Image 1: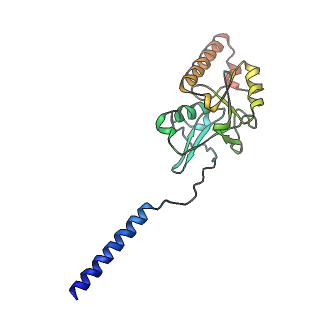
Image 2: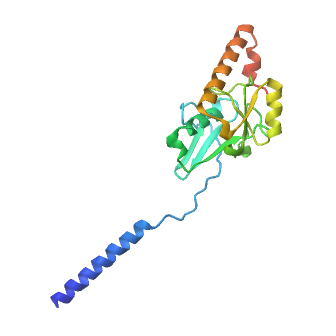
Image 3: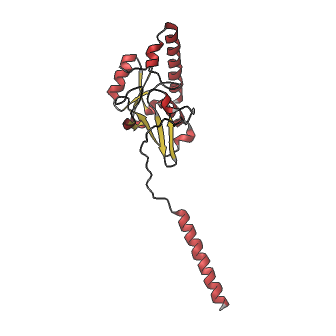
Amino acid sequence: MKTRYNLSLRSLIVLLFGLTLAACGEQDTTPVNLDPVAFHATDECHVCGMVVTDFPGPKGQAVEKDGVRKFCSTAEMLSWWLQPENRILDAKLYVHDMGQSQWDQPDDSHLIDATQAWYVAGTPLAGAMGASLASFADQQAAEALANEHNGTVMQFDEIDQEFLQQAAAAQHSDMHEAMQHGDMHDIVDGEMH
């Protein structure tokens, strides 16, 4: 009887061990919602810690299974995304479509896939720190803004850290020049025509 008990106990242990291994190998098949979310007055930028909604211009967000990272500007989000450790994340990136939004208060119902957007640099439109990159779903709308301000239109895949640094330096230079000439009201107002 003792032999049969030991054999049954061993069989039970082997069975439990096999079930444990099988459970470890199973993937969680719960669908993950990677849709964009609204920005709130208390949201802080993932990069700089400033309140996202305190600034005009388009914002960005990275949505992944572990949560949402929000950014006070498209440039902040792109700079974060370009870091090698972030590019391996399974995140969906979103930006405001400024063809459908007011510059001072972008509409969260018009968040678009950042990888499909057109970006305009070189405008006097005010935003958060760094370059103010206006994001658009429509290439023609992006080109119209760029033509109005002698700006540059870029696609997502064309933007790199060097471009972001040059755009930020150019915007800083433009703001400094405007302050010397007393034209700050145009930059502070940040109006899109």
